[in-house]
Each structure stands twice: as C-alpha cells, then as structure tokens.
Image (cartoon, rainbow, N blue to C red; front, side):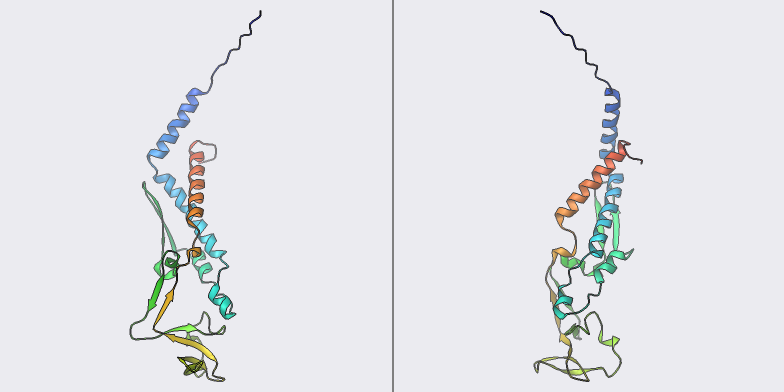
Length: 199
C-alpha cells in the first residue's frame, strides 16, 4: 500500500488579521462611514425627485407639471446632509411639501382664503400672475365662490378655507430603497477601508 503525503501551507494569516483589524476599527468609529452613506442617500433622494413623473393634480387638470419636485432635487440647499458616529440623517426643508410622504397635511390661512387651480391655465400659478382685469370674483358651477376668467366666466380658481393633502409615500424613495442604498454605501466604504479601492 502506498501513501500520499500532501502538505498545505496556510499563508496570508498576518495580512488577513490586519484586514480584520481595519474593519473592526472602521466599525468602532462609524462617523466616517455615516459621512459617506449620507452623501449617497442624499444623491439617491435628489435623483428620485428629479426623475419623478408622478403629477396627479396636473394630469387631472390636463396641465403641464410645474416641476416643483425636480426643482427641489436640483436645489443645493433643500436637502441637508448630517452625520455623526451614531447616525446618517437627511434634513429636508419643511416648505418643500415632502413631509406629505409621511403624513397627511392640512394647509390653512388665517383670515384669508386659499386658492386652488380649477383649470390647466391656472395650475402652478398665482392669481397675481395674471394681468389686472383678467380674473374676477364669481361663482363656479353656480355653487362655489372663486375666481373666474372675466372674458367668458369659465372657472379659474376655487376659494378654499383649508386644503387637505393625503399622505403620498411615493414622493420620496421607499424605506426598502433607502435600506438597500444604505447597505450598498456601507459595503463600498468597508471595501475602501480594505484598500481594494482607493481611499
């Protein structure tokens, strides 16, 4: 009977331990990782807003979308990035209306009426955008007070005491989308720590 002897040398243990220590250090102080993550998440949010084609009100009126959310996505100040050792945070300005991604919103004005566009020609515009004499007070459908076009008395704006906007989670990326993008950013950071990519 013959015997075969196989010698196996385990190499690279020292290098592997050094890589493991770098990962431990990176996870012990997560501030730099969160700083990388928040940039990726902010850009992900901006891209979502710029590419958003969801314009239910404009479609219902047969109007051209105003591009409001795309403007928010392109604005350098509307989405603020903040991070520390505990978290990565996005702060979105309240006046963007994006809070509606998480809850219903009621808009009220004290002592004054709000206006809501009643046709495509007034969507995305204020009554002040029209020259004097184009609009006048009138009744819409012989029932609702508002502004009508003086030339033909067709509806221009409804008067509203309050505007209720229902929650619309699609205004921002989904929770699952944020989680996946966050995991991807964390993985990319740890790869940089291992120097597989330039730091």
